[in-house]
Length: 285
Image 1: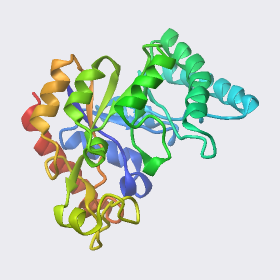
Image 2 (image 1 turned 120 degrees about the vertical axis):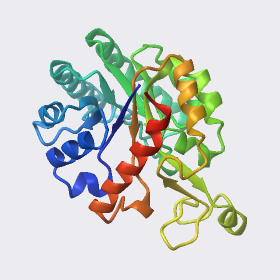
Image 3 (image 1 turned 90 degrees about the horizontal axis):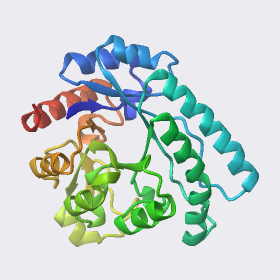
Image 4 (image 1 turned 180 degrees about the vertical axis):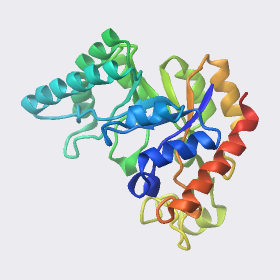
């Protein structure tokens, strides 16, 4: 298993991508996500000695309007063809719901949109990964029940998960059980932690504002995303289960820790990446 990272927050918006990949390689990372821009992102990553881990760029596929859905499917086909030519094996997939539609309708839109794209990916030898970020109720595939339903509707093996335990922690879902149940569908693994703040939970409960209890710096809340090792995830167990289910891909640090500059301070955010690499490397060869 290799250790990678992706550009988040100010690392994405304020740091040159070429500089960032060189920084990552110099501090022990082996892989990195590649954005669509800059256009030479894949070459920059490889020149730094990093494996391109995953990329993005697929249009929305959970779409109510049939004409728009077909147009987006065609755009997705072109993007998959481009990714295959670049030698990248994994593409991240959006799963935002149609806001005004029922869950049943959204799953049907997902079936119609995802199936042809997953079949195209399968033919190209690519994997599609949904990161199960709940987005405060705005995303579809956020829990074992929704994953089970989606994979029954779209049984194509190329469609799977980008597994991130941090989201499951604040949802109260057993991330190790979920990892074992959906092992064959784990196409990518993120490394992000979640701290639970008992006093905030006691004072405000699980529906606390402004974002269902997510704690801004210096303000109330009962959970926050944090660097690996700073929260509730047992990283030795998590990595052991990944190995046990046969996962041999990339474990990718997704730095969203406000205390380590995620939103505001590029240099402090880089230090967060260094801390994450040092912590996680004890569990990896």
